[in-house]
Length: 291
Length: 197
Image (cartoon, rainbow over all chains, first blue to last red):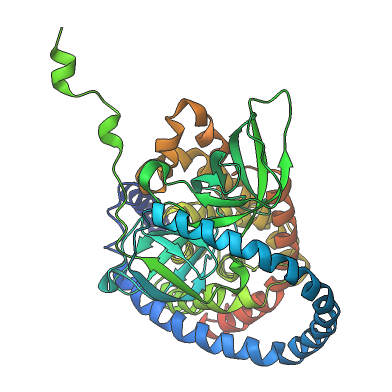
C-alpha cells in the first residue's frame, strides 16, 4: 500500500468519524442526554455573551439616541392633539368605571388566582438560526430554572424554557413555529390554540368553533388546557378574523402583547408545575381486567 | 488538519457570540447573516474538503448550541454543503472575486434546502423529545388533529423561507469577500510556499 492510499484511507476514516459524531449527537439530543454533556461549552460562552450583550445595548442606545428624541417630539405633538379628545371621553368613562370596579371586585373574589414566584432574568442572546425564535437568558439550573417553566414579561407571555445549562437557559418564544398554546378569548370565551407564525408568519389562534362570535380586539389568554401554562396569562390581542363557511373551524390573527424585538428583562415563573395528563391516556389496569 | 481545528474553534466562538448577542441589534433588511457559515465556506474554498468539513462540524455544533434546533442538524447540513461547494468549485474558473461570490450564494441555497429537509423529517421526533411543549399531547385530541403536520410543513421552501434564503444568499455573497480575502492572507502566511520543479 503506498502513501497516497493510506492518506486517502485516513481521510475517509476522518469523514466517517465526523458524520458518526453528528449522528450520535442527534440521537443523544433527541433522547435528552446531550444537554448536560455540552454545559461545559455553553456556560463560558454564555458568560461572555452576557457581557457582550450589555455592551451592545449601551452602544445601540448611544446610536439610537438622536432618532429617539426626534421620534419623541413628534409623539408629543400627536399626544397633545389627542389629549383634548381624551379628556372629554374620560368624563364618560369615569361613570362606567364605577360599575366596572364593582363587577371586577366580585370577579376577583370568585376567582382563585394562584400567586406564582417569579425570577427576573436578562436577555443575553438570540437564536443563531433565523428559522427558530428563541432567546437566551442569564439564569439557569443554579438559579432554579428548569425546562418547561413558563416565561413572561410585564406585558404578557413570552415563552417556555426549552433548554438549560448551569448558568443560562434558552427560552422558546410563543412566536416560534413549534409553539402551540391552548388559549381562550377574554370576552367571547371561545377556545382554540395559539400557534407561533415562525419565520415571517403571523401568530394565529386556530381551531375556534364556528359558532363562537369572536371580535377584533379581544384578548387571548392561556386557557390552562394540557397543564403546561398557568391560566389567564395574556398572550395577545385578536387583530383579524378569518371565518370561512366551508371550514370546520375559524381562525384569527393574534398580535402578541410582548414586543419581542425590544425584550430585555423577563420573568421565569419558577413554582409552576406542569401537570402530567398522560395518566388519562390509558385506562387503569383493573378496569381493563373487569368483565 | 490540527492547525485548521486550532484556528476554527476560537474563531467560531467569537463569531457565535457576535451572531447571537451583537448582530440581532444590527440586522440587514431584518436578517442576521450567518457569520459562521460564511467563514466555513470561505475556508473550504481555500483549503479544500477535509479542512472545510472540520470547520463545518465546529460551526454547526456551535450554531446548534445556541439555537432551538436539534443539535447536530446544522453540522450535518453544513458538511453536506461544504462537500457540494468544493465539488462545484472544480468546474469554476480560478477567481478570487466572482467564484466566492457565486458559490456563497449557491452554498446558502444548498444549505437551507438540506437544513429544512432534515428539520421537516425530524420534527415529530423533536416534538416527542420535548413533550413539555405540549404539541404532541394536543394533537392526540381529535379536535386538534393535524397540528403536528401543520408544524412540520412550515419547514419547507414556502414563500417565507424562500424570501429568507434569497435575501440571505445575497447578503452572504457580499459578506464572503472580506472573509475570503482575509482567510487568503492567513492561508498564505501559514501554508508552506509551493515550489514547482
